[in-house]
Length: 472
Image (cartoon, rainbow, N blue to C red; front, side, top):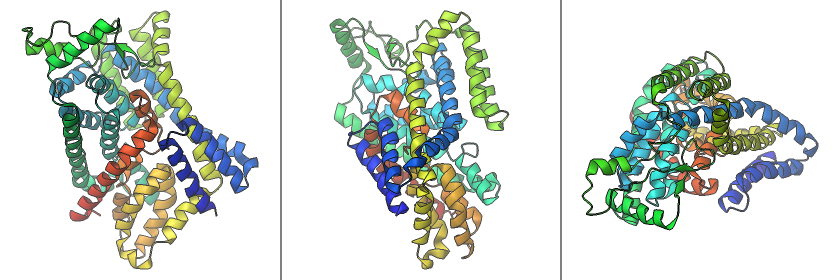
């Protein structure tokens, strides 16, 4: 019964948010509370919620201060050179913009933190998508898939969990998987090219002249044109406009490139004299995070306090920066604590354990010698419907034991378990995805409907490549 109710609860949640009948926060809270009563454990709801909040509180704290930290770094111009390079490549071509989104997300994902990746990627690309009226779910989908592939880095989380659960060395799991993961990343780039071509056909190929002229017309109609940018919590950053451009005006391409900026190059928050301090601080912070010098929430708390104090020594300026990012902080932290209700009820009532046991039990005995393949396939739904901790510490050891009985090595099982990460990154139980859709101003249901099929296909490509190369 718990198995059926668990699947029913997840299905109800997904259907309601995809049909936009409920907001994600409301659905994450009310649906599990209702099912908790159905299970007959309504009296324990408070304990389940508090347990879930306790488990996710460090994640919420990390996201809160990470948003402030990277939001301020975006404000002061740390990422402007990277953004300019990507924008120069993208110009006004929808195909290049989508490919640029995938490339930027993959590069930034090297830090191993999905929230950081999404903040920087959306900050850079959102203005372009809005200017050209491109589909924002394409941006969120491509960014999530690129980050999902890169999330398998040893310091990204899943690989370390698999190594810990099966008592293996993380490098022994990851290094042989590199060829298959590269194939998966290449597939994401190819997919982004295809999606970009589709957007190009829908919108047509624009030149910088046409985009800038259109913006001049819009400027005449409204006093100010404001668009959302990454670190801005109020979702509004004044754009630097191209006032010299127009078709046939004689403006050269370099000047047009300067006008076509994703972030205002003249914003008052820039701190060019502190660029290298900010860069070294960020590198040091990411290094300390990878080396686990301190817990990640503590690192970002210290980093946010330091970057605010150095870049904005006057208290009113510090208050202004915090206020600018407050909406993003509130939206994301609120979503995380709402997700704590969902995960708390799933785990507290025993639904997740029964669901995992049922899925393992339905595997035919004849599939024993192919347990690595089975694990790879199961990793798609299981890492989507439960946390990485639940899958790697609760399900993977059971699957590995079944595989060992048929001569399948734990290393193969561990590598196969990583296959589902491109889909996992869009799971409603992953806090970082709310950073992505929140900053991109995309409905979570719209993102889910778009990304699930492509992310699942990416997972299967990685699985196929792993089997082809003899890794899995």
